[in-house]
Each structure stands twice: as structure tokens, then as C-alpha cells.
Image 1 (cartoon, one colour):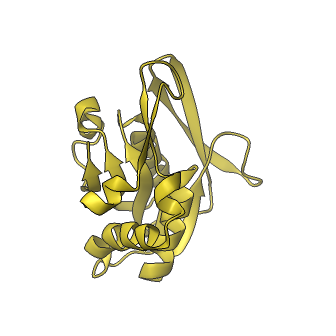
Image 2 (cartoon, one colour):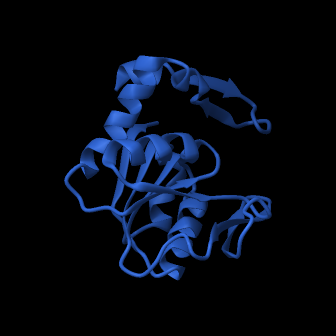
Image 3 (cartoon, one colour):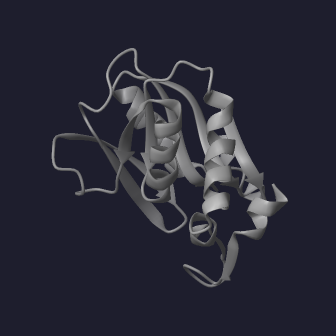
Length: 171
């Protein structure tokens, strides 16, 4: 795991002063690092029956699509508002400075689908909670949530007390 951490760049004061941003683009550009990160995220789910991987915009698309390929499932994107062309369901969540919203195609998942939600980062948990709500609104079952990075001090797990969480790296 130290090798993966060494591939992640810290960017101070992004997107605003006081934030230390964990930039995974440096890991993604490294073929061995990308392969290792995807392997680590996929491994706990190799023997679990899954129908879809749901990836949260935007880095969850990169990791989620690769995991879907590894596990032989389909991929469903969760996006910011106004980006999907067909009928959507939406969920709003709180931010430090207001609210934000996520959307998913209404017909992307159905009853009985077993879903793994993937994103690059678990911070406060609001985005992940909204994704869980969207998946369940469509009648699907959340098997778990997988994150490359968890910022433990922000206690995102508190937003997801009944969910099965897996993180590769913790800070």
C-alpha cells in the first residue's frame, strides 16, 4: 500500500484554502499503479455475485469501469445534474457550503440487481450516501461501497453505518 500512496500527489489549498487534495491522476498515469489499485479494489468482490458496478462522477468512472471489466459486470454512471440524456432519479446531499445533487438514469438498475458502488475518495460521506439512496430508489441492492482512499478524520463512515465499506488506503 505504501507504493500506491507514493503515487498520489498532495495538492495544498485545492479546491480552496486549507484543503490538502489527494490527487490520484499521478497514480492513474502509472500503468503498474493503476493496475494495482484496480486489483486491490476488485479483489474483495471476486466471489460475490454482482450485476453492476456504479461509479460516481468523475474518478469513480475511471476506477469503476475498470473494476466492472475485471469482475465481468456492467457499469452504471452516477453524474452531476443535467449530464444524463434520459429520465433520471436524483438525490441531494449537504456540503459545507450548501447542497449538491447526483443523478442516475431511472432505468439503469432494477429490482434484484446486486450493486457495488465505487469512488476514489470517502471524505464526509455525503456523496456516497446519496449514491446509496439512488441505487435503492431504483430497487437494487447495495452489496458494498469501495473507495481507493478514505480520509478517516472526516468520519464519512458515520453517514453509512449499515453499509459494507472497503477502502484501500487510509489517511
